[in-house]
Image (cartoon, rainbow, N blue to C red):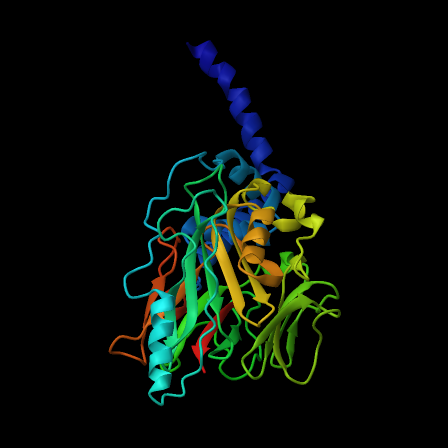
Length: 397
């Protein structure tokens, strides 16, 4: 027994001598300091305002600290491909009283009685991309009116006969009746002299007339473009990049920067993200090229993820589309199907894609937000507190 104990002593002594070395102590101190910094930095990311689940915030922190490949690998391992076949988990039927044809007839009757209301632009019913339509599929409902005139319509549409249980939402907004405002995020683009009414949220006192909100594009360091608002830039605006241009009169245009749209004295804001996915009415072949690297590497470059996009029609209506289990071509097809002649992808992944509309009820100064898609993640009041990403707010004219 004593021999065994004696045999252990030289080993313990060697370990003590090793730990007493100056280089080992310095390395240990550096490692300890690094771990303290990591814990502090991660803690700050988790408690920072701006929305996002704990997992989403951890992923964002990792990508911002050069750990994107680790996150991507983890997402690739856990990625579940979309389910083949099946039916949607919710009804696509237009709620009673929301049929746009009935509202239009009522407006025509009112005009005949001396009411000079503006004639609404009623989008044509959309055919299903998944085969025979389900009840209500492709039929428009009125989400919002301005002075009694329908201003925002929406409908639900399945985008695939193969993945037939997944439903996307399509929105049509009339710029004659609404105004679009670009808001900066608290982290992206971050603090700056962005001008009046450019808060990273919609505070009390600025909610009267609010009709809708929707997400913007990728994080700017991955968007392959820049950001401009009220004379201030984050990065540089890139020629050829897909761009949403916000004008001082509240309208927007969509196109390739330097070709279809460019800087003028009437521009209030510009948000760029990747390349156009609908260009002069056509879907470019690039939507099928290098999908992982060009159109969103998150979720392991999975083709079928939550995606969102924005487009504009030949008559000036602004189209927003979002939904689950979309590849880039399907997103482009939905925009084109809804009439967009120019269109671009915005953000991807379930937590960052959203569309909310607001019901004034008896409180017009504090309307209640509602998620458009029942399957949308996140609370509908996400923009009623400080938000980390830039977004668009839609108000009544």
